[in-house]
Amino acid sequence: MSDSNDDGPPGETPIQRALRLKQAALAARPKPPRGGRFQREQANRIAAGSSKPWNS
Image (cartoon, rainbow, N blue to C red; front, side):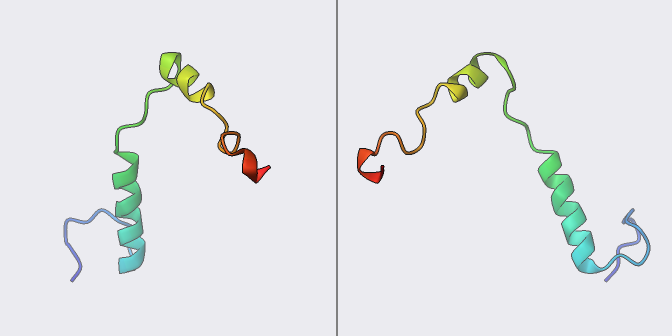
């Protein structure tokens, strides 16, 4: 069941290998843009509960 071309550490369990591969896949995903107009738009959004006056 072990792959001969896997570059993981020796003694790594299948669960540890799956977690390492999952984290590598998540790290490879494109990141949202930082700074500039996008960040200003995010900061200017209305607060989560302020549009529901009955919750206050």
